[in-house]
Image (tube, rainbow, N blue to C red; front, side, top):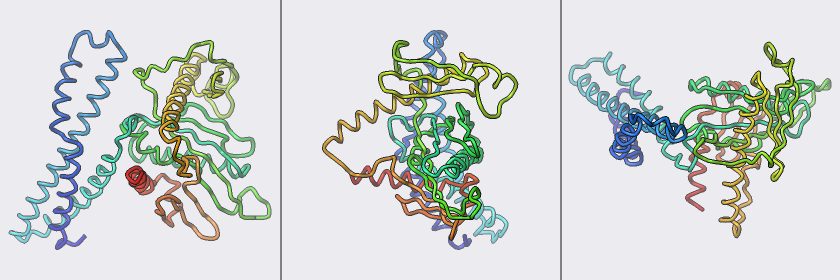
Length: 369
């Protein structure tokens, strides 16, 4: 970015941030923060743990939203003042400092602009992600493990914590499936655009004749269930099976029947958890996953009722991204047409550009509908 372009860039960033402020509405959020702070200060708050969790979680997210917007506004105003002073005094060092700061602000404001597009019912929640190998045999299982690492590295880059609930290892290489959570505000809204079928084209490392292989893996993203959702699952509606954990494990993980599989009899949904050492902990985690899937099923049922007369032919389960390693290198989103030739960076977790393009694409689709 040239120093001569800084005034125009700052002006554009100011326009973008003003639009964001209109959506976020910090003044309105501050009023809600004041109300929630009074509730949080009540001595009997934790008598109702579900309500206390709702209050403290909402308060924390509102405070973070306001601090982020106000912090960006302060930094942008400071950059404008420093640029004017640098121009008056011919201070090249200060101009270079403004240039670096404006570059950082541009990245952060663009990211926040995308965040304002997340306004779905559950977008603010943590994400529950399941990756499954599909067609392609051992290559598909290996691809599923590559995607798992990709999302874990993405989370690490953003300092988001993750927790693996269950991994089913394939016999030769890779995984059959994995279920994990990403814990961060708006994790579900952000990662929900990753849902769908991912395709990998490469020379198979498992083929002695070095032939090109196409394999597929499915990604499912659900909002994590909160206690306030009140999804009742009667004991009579579930069958609980226990078994010994498989795959790599620490002390006592693979030596007792601590892993749990729960079958929801009315719907046929099956979930399992083997990450924890105790059967009780694994059952609790599996129930959380089952609740999330039942919540998503209820949401989809409601959408199906509203869209009963429509058919757009574009289901979330359709193929959405292609990773080509041979005969050329390219990762391309088939919905947004966003693409990059840096395949290694993508598999190392650099997927923000794909996610941002997906969120913008989804909003355009919603507006068009």
